[in-house]
Length: 559
Image (cartoon, rainbow, N blue to C red; front, side):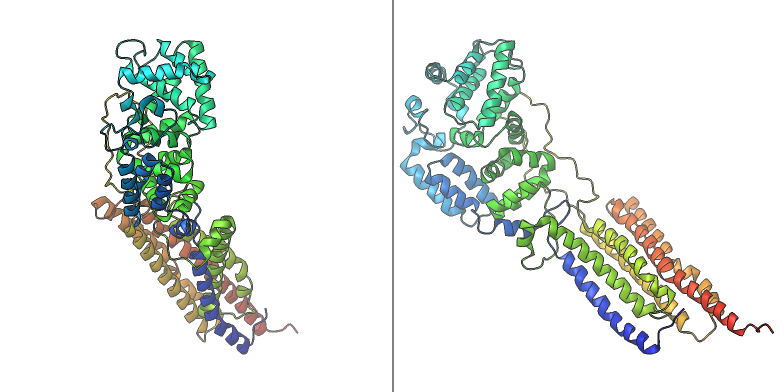
Protein backbone atom coordinates (compact mmCIF):
# COMPACT_ATOMS: atom_id res chain seq x y z
CA UNK A 1 0.00 0.00 0.00
CA UNK A 2 1.28 3.41 -0.91
CA UNK A 3 0.58 6.43 1.23
CA UNK A 4 0.36 9.86 -0.34
CA UNK A 5 2.74 12.52 0.96
CA UNK A 6 1.32 15.18 3.30
CA UNK A 7 1.50 17.88 0.64
CA UNK A 8 -0.66 15.85 -1.75
CA UNK A 9 -3.18 15.01 0.97
CA UNK A 10 -3.32 18.70 1.89
CA UNK A 11 -4.05 19.74 -1.69
CA UNK A 12 -6.79 17.12 -1.99
CA UNK A 13 -8.35 18.25 1.29
CA UNK A 14 -8.23 21.86 0.08
CA UNK A 15 -10.08 20.96 -3.11
CA UNK A 16 -12.75 19.00 -1.25
CA UNK A 17 -14.94 22.02 -0.33
CA UNK A 18 -14.94 23.05 -3.98
CA UNK A 19 -16.14 19.57 -4.95
CA UNK A 20 -18.97 19.89 -2.45
CA UNK A 21 -19.93 23.33 -3.77
CA UNK A 22 -19.72 22.17 -7.38
CA UNK A 23 -21.87 19.15 -6.59
CA UNK A 24 -24.48 21.27 -4.84
CA UNK A 25 -24.56 23.73 -7.73
CA UNK A 26 -24.94 20.92 -10.28
CA UNK A 27 -27.69 19.19 -8.28
CA UNK A 28 -29.57 22.47 -7.78
CA UNK A 29 -29.24 23.32 -11.48
CA UNK A 30 -30.72 19.94 -12.39
CA UNK A 31 -33.43 20.39 -9.81
CA UNK A 32 -34.43 23.72 -11.35
CA UNK A 33 -35.08 22.23 -14.80
CA UNK A 34 -38.87 22.43 -15.34
CA UNK A 35 -39.50 18.80 -16.30
CA UNK A 36 -41.16 15.96 -14.39
CA UNK A 37 -41.87 12.34 -15.13
CA UNK A 38 -45.65 12.41 -14.64
CA UNK A 39 -46.44 16.09 -14.14
CA UNK A 40 -46.24 19.40 -15.96
CA UNK A 41 -44.46 22.45 -14.61
CA UNK A 42 -46.38 25.76 -14.48
CA UNK A 43 -43.33 27.39 -16.07
CA UNK A 44 -43.74 25.08 -19.05
CA UNK A 45 -47.39 26.13 -19.38
CA UNK A 46 -46.44 29.80 -19.27
CA UNK A 47 -43.84 29.29 -21.98
CA UNK A 48 -46.29 27.31 -24.14
CA UNK A 49 -48.98 29.95 -23.80
CA UNK A 50 -46.73 32.94 -24.45
CA UNK A 51 -47.75 34.73 -27.64
CA UNK A 52 -50.81 32.52 -28.26
CA UNK A 53 -54.44 33.75 -28.26
CA UNK A 54 -56.10 34.31 -24.91
CA UNK A 55 -59.73 33.45 -24.21
CA UNK A 56 -60.88 37.02 -24.72
CA UNK A 57 -58.91 37.36 -27.96
CA UNK A 58 -60.29 34.08 -29.25
CA UNK A 59 -63.80 35.22 -28.34
CA UNK A 60 -63.32 38.43 -30.31
CA UNK A 61 -62.40 36.34 -33.35
CA UNK A 62 -65.63 34.35 -32.92
CA UNK A 63 -67.69 37.53 -32.78
CA UNK A 64 -65.97 38.74 -35.95
CA UNK A 65 -67.29 35.69 -37.82
CA UNK A 66 -70.75 36.06 -36.20
CA UNK A 67 -70.46 32.97 -33.97
CA UNK A 68 -71.89 34.75 -30.98
CA UNK A 69 -73.18 31.64 -29.19
CA UNK A 70 -69.72 30.09 -28.82
CA UNK A 71 -68.34 33.56 -28.04
CA UNK A 72 -70.80 33.88 -25.13
CA UNK A 73 -69.50 30.68 -23.52
CA UNK A 74 -65.91 31.77 -24.14
CA UNK A 75 -66.76 35.06 -22.40
CA UNK A 76 -68.03 33.13 -19.37
CA UNK A 77 -64.78 31.13 -19.36
CA UNK A 78 -62.73 34.34 -19.67
CA UNK A 79 -64.51 35.79 -16.64
CA UNK A 80 -63.95 32.56 -14.68
CA UNK A 81 -60.22 32.77 -15.42
CA UNK A 82 -60.09 36.52 -14.70
CA UNK A 83 -58.97 37.44 -18.20
CA UNK A 84 -58.31 41.21 -18.14
CA UNK A 85 -59.67 41.56 -21.69
CA UNK A 86 -63.03 39.98 -20.83
CA UNK A 87 -64.82 43.39 -20.69
CA UNK A 88 -63.71 44.09 -24.27
CA UNK A 89 -65.25 40.81 -25.43
CA UNK A 90 -68.44 41.56 -23.47
CA UNK A 91 -68.72 44.95 -25.18
CA UNK A 92 -68.29 43.34 -28.61
CA UNK A 93 -71.08 40.87 -27.86
CA UNK A 94 -73.38 43.65 -26.65
CA UNK A 95 -72.78 45.63 -29.82
CA UNK A 96 -73.58 42.61 -31.99
CA UNK A 97 -76.73 41.89 -29.98
CA UNK A 98 -77.86 45.48 -30.47
CA UNK A 99 -77.46 45.13 -34.25
CA UNK A 100 -78.86 41.58 -34.60
CA UNK A 101 -81.09 40.81 -31.56
CA UNK A 102 -82.79 37.86 -33.24
CA UNK A 103 -79.56 35.91 -33.72
CA UNK A 104 -78.66 35.96 -30.03
CA UNK A 105 -81.07 33.15 -29.11
CA UNK A 106 -79.76 30.89 -31.89
CA UNK A 107 -76.09 31.71 -31.30
CA UNK A 108 -75.50 32.91 -34.85
CA UNK A 109 -76.85 32.77 -38.37
CA UNK A 110 -77.27 29.52 -40.32
CA UNK A 111 -78.11 29.25 -44.01
CA UNK A 112 -80.18 26.08 -43.56
CA UNK A 113 -82.24 27.27 -40.59
CA UNK A 114 -82.88 30.82 -41.74
CA UNK A 115 -85.47 29.91 -44.43
CA UNK A 116 -87.38 27.86 -41.85
CA UNK A 117 -87.28 30.04 -38.73
CA UNK A 118 -86.32 33.53 -39.97
CA UNK A 119 -83.44 33.75 -37.51
CA UNK A 120 -83.02 37.52 -37.77
CA UNK A 121 -86.56 38.20 -36.59
CA UNK A 122 -86.72 39.37 -32.98
CA UNK A 123 -88.31 36.51 -31.01
CA UNK A 124 -88.18 38.40 -27.72
CA UNK A 125 -85.46 36.15 -26.32
CA UNK A 126 -82.53 38.19 -25.09
CA UNK A 127 -80.09 35.40 -24.27
CA UNK A 128 -78.66 32.18 -25.60
CA UNK A 129 -81.45 29.59 -25.85
CA UNK A 130 -81.01 25.78 -25.93
CA UNK A 131 -81.70 24.58 -29.43
CA UNK A 132 -84.25 21.92 -28.42
CA UNK A 133 -86.42 24.69 -26.98
CA UNK A 134 -87.23 25.77 -30.55
CA UNK A 135 -88.11 22.21 -31.62
CA UNK A 136 -90.69 21.58 -28.87
CA UNK A 137 -93.63 22.84 -30.87
CA UNK A 138 -95.37 20.64 -33.42
CA UNK A 139 -95.20 23.44 -35.99
CA UNK A 140 -91.40 23.63 -35.79
CA UNK A 141 -91.03 19.86 -36.11
CA UNK A 142 -93.39 19.83 -39.06
CA UNK A 143 -91.28 22.43 -40.86
CA UNK A 144 -88.11 20.41 -40.18
CA UNK A 145 -89.67 17.13 -41.38
CA UNK A 146 -90.83 18.72 -44.62
CA UNK A 147 -87.41 20.26 -45.16
CA UNK A 148 -85.41 17.10 -44.45
CA UNK A 149 -87.76 14.97 -46.55
CA UNK A 150 -86.51 16.86 -49.61
CA UNK A 151 -82.85 16.24 -48.80
CA UNK A 152 -80.78 14.44 -51.41
CA UNK A 153 -78.47 12.94 -48.76
CA UNK A 154 -78.94 9.23 -48.14
CA UNK A 155 -77.62 9.69 -44.63
CA UNK A 156 -80.28 12.28 -43.84
CA UNK A 157 -83.02 10.07 -45.29
CA UNK A 158 -81.83 7.17 -43.12
CA UNK A 159 -81.95 9.35 -40.01
CA UNK A 160 -85.48 10.53 -40.79
CA UNK A 161 -86.64 6.88 -41.11
CA UNK A 162 -85.69 6.39 -37.45
CA UNK A 163 -89.02 8.05 -36.56
CA UNK A 164 -90.84 4.87 -37.56
CA UNK A 165 -88.92 2.55 -35.22
CA UNK A 166 -90.74 1.26 -32.15
CA UNK A 167 -87.78 -0.47 -30.47
CA UNK A 168 -86.60 2.72 -28.84
CA UNK A 169 -85.51 1.54 -25.39
CA UNK A 170 -86.01 4.30 -22.84
CA UNK A 171 -87.52 6.72 -25.36
CA UNK A 172 -91.17 6.80 -26.33
CA UNK A 173 -91.41 6.11 -30.10
CA UNK A 174 -91.49 9.34 -32.08
CA UNK A 175 -94.84 8.63 -33.75
CA UNK A 176 -96.69 7.88 -30.49
CA UNK A 177 -98.09 10.28 -27.88
CA UNK A 178 -95.24 11.45 -25.67
CA UNK A 179 -92.68 10.82 -28.41
CA UNK A 180 -92.01 14.50 -29.05
CA UNK A 181 -88.50 14.44 -27.43
CA UNK A 182 -87.33 11.59 -29.69
CA UNK A 183 -88.94 13.23 -32.71
CA UNK A 184 -87.06 16.45 -31.97
CA UNK A 185 -83.78 14.58 -31.51
CA UNK A 186 -84.16 12.71 -34.81
CA UNK A 187 -84.80 15.98 -36.61
CA UNK A 188 -81.87 17.65 -34.82
CA UNK A 189 -79.53 14.84 -35.84
CA UNK A 190 -80.77 15.05 -39.43
CA UNK A 191 -80.27 18.80 -39.47
CA UNK A 192 -76.69 18.47 -38.19
CA UNK A 193 -75.98 15.83 -40.83
CA UNK A 194 -77.62 17.85 -43.61
CA UNK A 195 -75.64 20.98 -42.83
CA UNK A 196 -72.28 19.20 -42.69
CA UNK A 197 -71.86 20.21 -39.06
CA UNK A 198 -70.49 16.84 -37.89
CA UNK A 199 -66.81 15.97 -38.00
CA UNK A 200 -66.04 13.37 -40.71
CA UNK A 201 -65.27 10.66 -38.12
CA UNK A 202 -68.45 11.35 -36.14
CA UNK A 203 -70.54 11.47 -39.31
CA UNK A 204 -69.26 8.05 -40.43
CA UNK A 205 -69.87 6.51 -37.01
CA UNK A 206 -73.37 7.99 -36.75
CA UNK A 207 -74.23 6.75 -40.24
CA UNK A 208 -73.13 3.24 -39.26
CA UNK A 209 -75.22 3.26 -36.08
CA UNK A 210 -78.27 4.50 -37.97
CA UNK A 211 -77.96 1.80 -40.64
CA UNK A 212 -77.57 -0.86 -37.91
CA UNK A 213 -80.63 0.42 -36.06
CA UNK A 214 -82.76 0.36 -39.22
CA UNK A 215 -81.59 -3.15 -40.07
CA UNK A 216 -82.32 -4.48 -36.56
CA UNK A 217 -85.49 -2.38 -36.20
CA UNK A 218 -84.38 -1.07 -32.81
CA UNK A 219 -82.19 1.78 -31.63
CA UNK A 220 -79.65 -0.33 -29.76
CA UNK A 221 -76.35 1.56 -29.37
CA UNK A 222 -77.86 4.57 -31.09
CA UNK A 223 -80.01 5.20 -28.03
CA UNK A 224 -76.98 6.32 -25.97
CA UNK A 225 -75.98 8.72 -28.74
CA UNK A 226 -79.43 10.31 -28.73
CA UNK A 227 -79.45 10.61 -24.93
CA UNK A 228 -76.14 12.47 -25.16
CA UNK A 229 -77.55 14.71 -27.87
CA UNK A 230 -80.55 15.37 -25.61
CA UNK A 231 -78.31 16.49 -22.73
CA UNK A 232 -76.31 18.85 -24.93
CA UNK A 233 -79.34 20.11 -26.85
CA UNK A 234 -80.95 21.23 -23.59
CA UNK A 235 -77.86 23.22 -22.60
CA UNK A 236 -76.37 24.62 -25.82
CA UNK A 237 -77.85 26.88 -28.45
CA UNK A 238 -77.58 26.02 -32.15
CA UNK A 239 -74.31 27.85 -32.76
CA UNK A 240 -72.66 26.35 -29.68
CA UNK A 241 -73.77 22.81 -30.53
CA UNK A 242 -72.57 23.09 -34.11
CA UNK A 243 -69.07 24.21 -33.10
CA UNK A 244 -68.79 21.38 -30.59
CA UNK A 245 -69.96 18.75 -33.10
CA UNK A 246 -67.27 19.86 -35.56
CA UNK A 247 -64.60 19.09 -32.93
CA UNK A 248 -66.04 15.79 -31.72
CA UNK A 249 -64.65 12.69 -33.43
CA UNK A 250 -66.68 9.90 -31.84
CA UNK A 251 -69.99 9.02 -30.26
CA UNK A 252 -68.05 8.13 -27.12
CA UNK A 253 -66.74 11.68 -26.82
CA UNK A 254 -70.27 12.96 -27.38
CA UNK A 255 -71.36 10.86 -24.41
CA UNK A 256 -68.45 12.05 -22.28
CA UNK A 257 -69.28 15.71 -22.97
CA UNK A 258 -72.92 15.12 -22.14
CA UNK A 259 -71.84 13.42 -18.91
CA UNK A 260 -69.59 16.34 -17.99
CA UNK A 261 -72.40 18.78 -18.74
CA UNK A 262 -74.62 16.88 -16.30
CA UNK A 263 -72.17 16.41 -13.42
CA UNK A 264 -70.32 19.75 -13.72
CA UNK A 265 -72.75 22.31 -15.18
CA UNK A 266 -71.00 25.23 -13.47
CA UNK A 267 -67.80 24.37 -15.35
CA UNK A 268 -69.45 23.97 -18.77
CA UNK A 269 -68.04 27.27 -20.14
CA UNK A 270 -64.48 26.15 -19.25
CA UNK A 271 -65.01 22.69 -20.75
CA UNK A 272 -66.53 24.14 -23.90
CA UNK A 273 -63.87 26.83 -24.32
CA UNK A 274 -61.11 24.23 -23.90
CA UNK A 275 -62.63 22.11 -26.68
CA UNK A 276 -62.63 25.10 -29.04
CA UNK A 277 -59.17 26.24 -27.92
CA UNK A 278 -57.58 22.83 -28.46
CA UNK A 279 -59.71 22.03 -31.53
CA UNK A 280 -60.36 18.60 -29.99
CA UNK A 281 -63.31 17.78 -27.77
CA UNK A 282 -61.96 14.23 -27.45
CA UNK A 283 -58.77 15.27 -25.63
CA UNK A 284 -60.59 17.61 -23.26
CA UNK A 285 -63.21 15.03 -22.32
CA UNK A 286 -60.59 12.30 -21.86
CA UNK A 287 -58.46 14.52 -19.61
CA UNK A 288 -61.34 15.52 -17.36
CA UNK A 289 -62.76 12.00 -17.14
CA UNK A 290 -59.33 10.77 -16.02
CA UNK A 291 -58.39 13.50 -13.51
CA UNK A 292 -61.74 14.79 -12.24
CA UNK A 293 -61.93 18.01 -10.22
CA UNK A 294 -58.15 18.30 -9.99
CA UNK A 295 -58.02 18.08 -13.78
CA UNK A 296 -60.65 20.82 -14.00
CA UNK A 297 -58.47 23.15 -11.94
CA UNK A 298 -55.45 22.26 -14.10
CA UNK A 299 -57.49 23.02 -17.21
CA UNK A 300 -58.54 26.36 -15.72
CA UNK A 301 -54.88 27.19 -15.07
CA UNK A 302 -53.95 26.32 -18.65
CA UNK A 303 -56.79 28.47 -20.01
CA UNK A 304 -55.41 31.42 -18.04
CA UNK A 305 -52.08 31.13 -19.90
CA UNK A 306 -53.48 30.91 -23.43
CA UNK A 307 -54.25 28.53 -26.26
CA UNK A 308 -50.73 27.08 -26.43
CA UNK A 309 -50.86 26.14 -22.75
CA UNK A 310 -54.14 24.26 -23.20
CA UNK A 311 -52.79 22.32 -26.16
CA UNK A 312 -49.61 21.47 -24.22
CA UNK A 313 -51.56 20.22 -21.20
CA UNK A 314 -53.82 18.02 -23.29
CA UNK A 315 -50.90 16.76 -25.37
CA UNK A 316 -48.93 15.64 -22.30
CA UNK A 317 -52.10 14.45 -20.48
CA UNK A 318 -50.55 14.76 -17.02
CA UNK A 319 -51.46 16.89 -13.96
CA UNK A 320 -49.82 20.22 -13.18
CA UNK A 321 -47.07 20.12 -10.56
CA UNK A 322 -48.36 22.90 -8.32
CA UNK A 323 -45.47 22.48 -5.86
CA UNK A 324 -42.93 23.23 -8.59
CA UNK A 325 -39.80 25.17 -7.66
CA UNK A 326 -38.28 28.17 -9.50
CA UNK A 327 -36.76 27.33 -12.85
CA UNK A 328 -33.65 28.29 -14.79
CA UNK A 329 -34.16 31.07 -17.30
CA UNK A 330 -34.79 29.77 -20.83
CA UNK A 331 -35.13 26.15 -19.66
CA UNK A 332 -38.91 26.13 -20.15
CA UNK A 333 -38.59 27.00 -23.84
CA UNK A 334 -36.04 24.22 -24.30
CA UNK A 335 -38.30 21.76 -22.46
CA UNK A 336 -41.10 22.45 -24.95
CA UNK A 337 -39.01 21.26 -27.89
CA UNK A 338 -36.82 18.61 -26.22
CA UNK A 339 -38.66 17.32 -23.12
CA UNK A 340 -36.98 13.89 -23.03
CA UNK A 341 -33.51 15.36 -23.42
CA UNK A 342 -34.06 17.84 -20.62
CA UNK A 343 -35.49 15.11 -18.37
CA UNK A 344 -32.35 13.01 -18.90
CA UNK A 345 -30.14 16.04 -18.19
CA UNK A 346 -32.05 16.71 -14.99
CA UNK A 347 -31.51 13.21 -13.61
CA UNK A 348 -27.86 13.12 -14.70
CA UNK A 349 -27.21 16.49 -13.06
CA UNK A 350 -28.80 15.40 -9.77
CA UNK A 351 -26.91 12.09 -9.72
CA UNK A 352 -23.60 13.73 -10.66
CA UNK A 353 -24.15 16.48 -8.11
CA UNK A 354 -24.82 14.01 -5.30
CA UNK A 355 -21.74 12.01 -6.34
CA UNK A 356 -19.53 15.09 -6.18
CA UNK A 357 -20.93 16.02 -2.77
CA UNK A 358 -20.23 12.53 -1.42
CA UNK A 359 -16.70 12.52 -2.82
CA UNK A 360 -16.05 16.00 -1.49
CA UNK A 361 -17.31 15.13 1.99
CA UNK A 362 -15.20 11.99 1.95
CA UNK A 363 -12.03 13.93 1.18
CA UNK A 364 -12.93 16.84 3.43
CA UNK A 365 -14.24 15.16 6.59
CA UNK A 366 -12.76 11.67 6.49
CA UNK A 367 -9.97 10.75 4.06
CA UNK A 368 -8.06 8.95 6.86
CA UNK A 369 -5.65 7.20 4.52
CA UNK A 370 -5.07 9.87 1.93
CA UNK A 371 -5.39 9.65 -1.84
CA UNK A 372 -3.30 6.57 -2.20
CA UNK A 373 -5.05 4.51 0.46
CA UNK A 374 -7.04 1.42 -0.35
CA UNK A 375 -10.17 2.94 1.20
CA UNK A 376 -9.93 5.95 -1.06
CA UNK A 377 -9.10 3.92 -4.15
CA UNK A 378 -12.24 1.81 -3.77
CA UNK A 379 -14.40 4.82 -2.96
CA UNK A 380 -15.20 5.84 -6.54
CA UNK A 381 -17.41 2.89 -7.38
CA UNK A 382 -19.19 3.02 -4.02
CA UNK A 383 -19.80 6.75 -4.31
CA UNK A 384 -21.32 6.19 -7.74
CA UNK A 385 -23.69 3.49 -6.49
CA UNK A 386 -24.65 5.43 -3.37
CA UNK A 387 -25.15 8.64 -5.32
CA UNK A 388 -27.59 6.85 -7.64
CA UNK A 389 -29.42 5.40 -4.63
CA UNK A 390 -29.55 8.72 -2.77
CA UNK A 391 -30.58 10.67 -5.88
CA UNK A 392 -33.29 8.10 -6.59
CA UNK A 393 -34.66 8.50 -3.06
CA UNK A 394 -34.72 12.28 -3.40
CA UNK A 395 -36.43 12.18 -6.80
CA UNK A 396 -39.02 9.61 -5.69
CA UNK A 397 -39.91 11.62 -2.59
CA UNK A 398 -40.19 14.93 -4.42
CA UNK A 399 -41.81 13.83 -7.70
CA UNK A 400 -45.45 14.60 -6.88
CA UNK A 401 -47.13 11.90 -8.99
CA UNK A 402 -44.41 9.26 -9.35
CA UNK A 403 -45.42 6.85 -6.60
CA UNK A 404 -48.55 8.48 -5.22
CA UNK A 405 -51.69 6.86 -6.61
CA UNK A 406 -53.98 9.32 -8.35
CA UNK A 407 -57.32 9.82 -6.55
CA UNK A 408 -60.43 8.44 -8.17
CA UNK A 409 -61.92 10.87 -10.66
CA UNK A 410 -65.18 12.52 -9.60
CA UNK A 411 -66.22 12.61 -13.28
CA UNK A 412 -66.07 8.88 -14.02
CA UNK A 413 -68.70 7.79 -16.50
CA UNK A 414 -71.85 6.19 -15.13
CA UNK A 415 -74.97 4.87 -16.78
CA UNK A 416 -76.88 7.94 -18.00
CA UNK A 417 -80.35 8.59 -16.65
CA UNK A 418 -82.91 9.82 -19.14
CA UNK A 419 -84.14 13.15 -17.79
CA UNK A 420 -86.37 15.27 -19.95
CA UNK A 421 -86.59 18.11 -17.46
CA UNK A 422 -83.85 20.65 -17.27
CA UNK A 423 -82.77 19.60 -13.77
CA UNK A 424 -79.29 18.23 -13.26
CA UNK A 425 -77.10 17.53 -10.27
CA UNK A 426 -74.53 20.22 -9.76
CA UNK A 427 -71.00 19.90 -8.57
CA UNK A 428 -69.70 22.22 -5.91
CA UNK A 429 -67.77 24.75 -7.95
CA UNK A 430 -65.99 26.00 -4.89
CA UNK A 431 -64.43 22.64 -4.14
CA UNK A 432 -60.72 22.52 -4.65
CA UNK A 433 -58.75 19.56 -5.99
CA UNK A 434 -56.81 17.38 -3.63
CA UNK A 435 -53.29 18.60 -3.21
CA UNK A 436 -50.56 16.40 -4.68
CA UNK A 437 -48.85 16.30 -1.27
CA UNK A 438 -49.66 18.34 1.83
CA UNK A 439 -47.07 20.96 2.78
CA UNK A 440 -46.87 19.47 6.29
CA UNK A 441 -45.83 16.15 4.80
CA UNK A 442 -43.12 17.82 2.73
CA UNK A 443 -41.87 19.60 5.86
CA UNK A 444 -41.78 16.34 7.83
CA UNK A 445 -39.85 14.61 5.04
CA UNK A 446 -37.37 17.50 5.00
CA UNK A 447 -36.97 17.28 8.80
CA UNK A 448 -36.34 13.51 8.65
CA UNK A 449 -33.77 14.02 5.89
CA UNK A 450 -32.04 16.83 7.83
CA UNK A 451 -31.79 14.64 10.95
CA UNK A 452 -30.14 11.86 8.97
CA UNK A 453 -27.71 14.31 7.36
CA UNK A 454 -26.77 15.50 10.87
CA UNK A 455 -26.24 11.88 12.01
CA UNK A 456 -24.14 11.18 8.92
CA UNK A 457 -21.90 14.18 9.54
CA UNK A 458 -21.57 13.21 13.22
CA UNK A 459 -20.39 9.72 12.24
CA UNK A 460 -17.89 11.17 9.75
CA UNK A 461 -16.57 13.49 12.42
CA UNK A 462 -16.08 10.59 14.85
CA UNK A 463 -14.21 8.53 12.21
CA UNK A 464 -11.99 11.51 11.48
CA UNK A 465 -11.34 12.00 15.19
CA UNK A 466 -10.27 8.36 15.63
CA UNK A 467 -8.13 8.48 12.50
CA UNK A 468 -6.25 11.56 13.71
CA UNK A 469 -5.32 10.09 17.13
CA UNK A 470 -1.68 9.20 17.63
CA UNK A 471 -2.25 5.57 18.67
CA UNK A 472 -1.57 2.20 17.12
CA UNK A 473 -3.89 0.67 14.46
CA UNK A 474 -5.00 -1.97 16.98
CA UNK A 475 -6.19 0.70 19.41
CA UNK A 476 -8.01 2.50 16.60
CA UNK A 477 -9.82 -0.72 15.76
CA UNK A 478 -10.95 -1.02 19.38
CA UNK A 479 -12.15 2.58 19.31
CA UNK A 480 -14.10 1.92 16.09
CA UNK A 481 -15.77 -1.12 17.65
CA UNK A 482 -16.64 1.00 20.67
CA UNK A 483 -18.56 3.41 18.38
CA UNK A 484 -20.79 0.74 16.77
CA UNK A 485 -23.87 2.14 18.48
CA UNK A 486 -23.09 5.60 17.14
CA UNK A 487 -22.75 4.21 13.61
CA UNK A 488 -26.20 2.59 14.02
CA UNK A 489 -27.73 5.85 15.24
CA UNK A 490 -29.32 6.50 11.84
CA UNK A 491 -31.49 3.41 12.22
CA UNK A 492 -32.61 4.41 15.72
CA UNK A 493 -33.49 7.92 14.57
CA UNK A 494 -35.27 6.57 11.49
CA UNK A 495 -37.38 4.09 13.44
CA UNK A 496 -38.14 6.72 16.06
CA UNK A 497 -39.27 9.19 13.40
CA UNK A 498 -41.58 6.63 11.77
CA UNK A 499 -43.02 5.61 15.14
CA UNK A 500 -43.60 9.26 16.10
CA UNK A 501 -45.31 9.95 12.77
CA UNK A 502 -47.60 6.93 13.13
CA UNK A 503 -48.55 8.02 16.67
CA UNK A 504 -49.41 11.51 15.44
CA UNK A 505 -51.49 10.04 12.61
CA UNK A 506 -53.31 7.74 15.06
CA UNK A 507 -54.07 10.65 17.39
CA UNK A 508 -55.34 12.72 14.49
CA UNK A 509 -52.71 15.42 14.94
CA UNK A 510 -51.33 14.83 11.42
CA UNK A 511 -53.01 13.62 8.25
CA UNK A 512 -52.35 10.04 7.19
CA UNK A 513 -49.52 9.84 4.68
CA UNK A 514 -47.43 6.67 4.65
CA UNK A 515 -44.84 8.17 2.32
CA UNK A 516 -43.96 10.84 4.88
CA UNK A 517 -44.03 8.38 7.80
CA UNK A 518 -41.85 5.68 6.28
CA UNK A 519 -39.45 8.15 4.66
CA UNK A 520 -37.80 8.45 8.09
CA UNK A 521 -37.05 4.72 8.07
CA UNK A 522 -35.84 4.89 4.49
CA UNK A 523 -33.48 7.76 5.23
CA UNK A 524 -32.19 5.92 8.31
CA UNK A 525 -31.37 2.76 6.35
CA UNK A 526 -29.63 4.84 3.69
CA UNK A 527 -27.60 6.75 6.28
CA UNK A 528 -26.38 3.62 8.09
CA UNK A 529 -25.56 1.87 4.82
CA UNK A 530 -23.64 4.94 3.69
CA UNK A 531 -21.65 5.18 6.93
CA UNK A 532 -20.84 1.51 7.35
CA UNK A 533 -20.27 0.48 3.73
CA UNK A 534 -18.74 3.68 2.44
CA UNK A 535 -16.65 4.74 5.46
CA UNK A 536 -16.42 2.31 8.41
CA UNK A 537 -15.62 -0.87 6.48
CA UNK A 538 -12.83 0.62 4.28
CA UNK A 539 -11.27 2.40 7.29
CA UNK A 540 -11.26 -0.73 9.46
CA UNK A 541 -9.81 -2.72 6.58
CA UNK A 542 -7.03 -0.16 6.24
CA UNK A 543 -6.33 -0.41 9.98
CA UNK A 544 -6.11 -4.21 9.75
CA UNK A 545 -3.63 -3.94 6.90
CA UNK A 546 -1.57 -1.35 8.77
CA UNK A 547 -1.55 -3.54 11.89
CA UNK A 548 -0.34 -6.52 9.84
CA UNK A 549 2.42 -4.49 8.21
CA UNK A 550 3.55 -3.16 11.60
CA UNK A 551 3.62 -6.68 13.03
CA UNK A 552 5.65 -7.85 10.05
CA UNK A 553 8.18 -5.07 10.55
CA UNK A 554 8.64 -5.83 14.26
CA UNK A 555 8.74 -9.61 13.95
CA UNK A 556 12.25 -11.09 14.56
CA UNK A 557 13.96 -12.16 11.42
CA UNK A 558 14.87 -15.81 11.00
CA UNK A 559 18.63 -16.57 11.44
